[in-house]
Amino acid sequence: MATKPEEPTVSTQPPVPGPDFESAPTGTPADSDAAYLEKLGYKQELNRTLGLFSAFGVQFTSIAIASGIFTTLIVGFGFFGPASFWSFLVGGGLQVFTVGLAVAQLVSAYPLAGGVYQITGRITGKPWLAWQTGWWLLIAHTVAVTTVAVSISPFIAGWFGVTFDGPADTLPWALGLIVLGTIINIAGVKVAAVLNNIGVVAEVLCVVALVGVLLVVKHPTQPLSFLRDSAGTASGGNWFVPFLFAMILPAYAISSFDATGNASEETKDAARKAPMASVMANVSSYVVGVFMVALIMLAIQDLPAVMDSDTPVKLILDTAVGSAFANVFEAVAIIALFAALVMLQLTGIRVLWSQARDGQVPAAHWLRKVSAQRIPINATLTIFALSVIFALWSSLLSVLAAMTALAWGLAYGVVVTVGLWGLLEHKLPKHPWHYGFLSPLIFVLAIAWSVVLCALLIYSDPTHVGIGMLLVILSGAVVYMTIPKSRRGKSIDTLQGHL
Image (cartoon, rainbow, N blue to C red; front, top):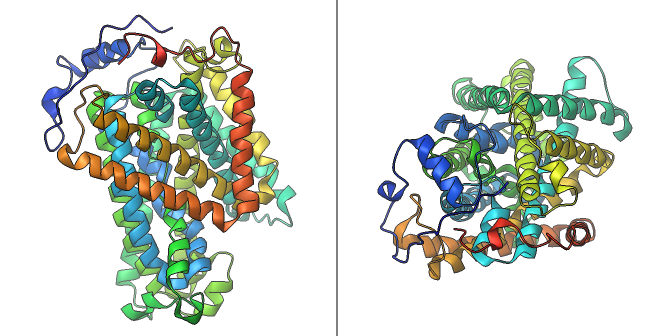
């Protein structure tokens, strides 16, 4: 239950360059976290056990760059062939160094479970807009859980000699993975953090193994000029359009920028460490991704075969360094992706629980309940049920993946726009992580990139992705209207005295 917050002290001075660590609350981290959370209107209900490495792991594992590239590089090939490396380089840079940095600064101001939902509501005082952004991210993370489960099911089944003849064969395996992930989240954040750390190690092993093998093991490689080969996708010399559409690839591979933000109430010294961990995870994922994509492209032996393959990365590794390494890499990547599934579900659970804590969902009293082990048990079960429902549409995997990217893009676009307004109007509370005089420029570029990315995602498949996202928005409006009128729009972020 929200407590009556103290009168906030909102900074009216522009921040100095670089993270201002002196402006954070004083005292021990635990005391500072609890005091600041009380100022924001809440009491400590979740276990605050995550340090910097675990917070980094939440984001890094959610992104799962090595294993993500393993499953999504086909998107870049489809739009621009090997030349999609440049799309990843530019598009990924825009993702990480505009949207990623902007969201991290906002997390420092509002280190709360609920992330974008909380930030939007507290800056604007517009509960409906805040609720919709939270709804989009709730759906995005829940669909992402299903997407990961469905995408790795054929690989896991293959380990047991099982092959799939159609989408119906995938369903029981995907459901089993979702159930297992839910059990881990019910076991508690410490258990999830252990798996999360395992996921980080698995991701690092993937990266080191892949980069090391492709650099050390002797195999035929293409010249650097091969990275300009569009594989016939740039007809008539018009390279700009396919280059632009291939920038959808990093939107799939590098996202979930508010994962550490949603775990802020479980992170020690959250106003500093949550954004720091987020930026560390985003930048390291991007740098690793650039090297991986370049090395994989240069290892291609038979470009037409790769362009026609449903699993191009596995084919490239098979022909370049042998099937034994490709199989080991696949196994480690699957472990990392399962850890990502658990972290994505954890993030979606925190969004729903945050909305329920504010009374901003139907059955809020039931959904906001926390177990004796401080686990939001009913919110966990609800996200599990939604994931199962989405799994029934597993045949539309590519559409679900695109809708997930669009939901993330829209929600982050809204929050960075709101954040820029809050920054210019000095509405943000004093926060230790910011970029000084560069902050407004970063937010402006983040808005511009968000608009471009959303337009690309919708235009790539307006019937399924565009209309699908419209249905998400409309369904959100319907759910919002079912909230009892007595508490609809009356969350803590609209009360007097909040930060």
